[in-house]
Length: 108
Image (cartoon, rainbow, N blue to C red; front, top):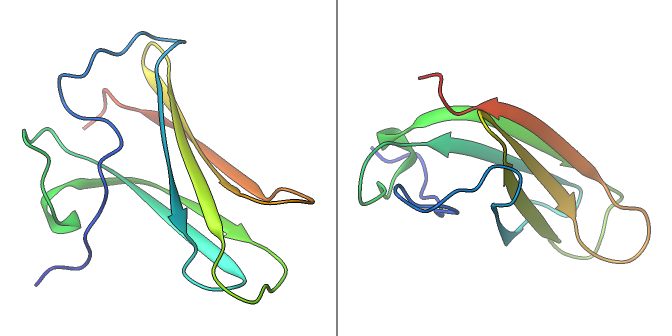
């Protein structure tokens, strides 16, 4: 049974220049008060469609004041030599809520 479907931010074989390459996209929060962004990786080409076919590497959690609806969350990956920094930030005016994680892409 599939747990969830995910979106690919960078594909296998894409040119990555450490310190210069990044990838980002905007997603909707799961509720009007919080968002959890799960980060996965896969060596499959083309990328798998379901999270059950790849490895979970990080969770990012955001909590914010209640809004009328779900809010946009910008997820960004900045690539370094070995590590990638993944950040998630609530979009919009006012105080920005942000969470980040450093991931070693060379570890399986």
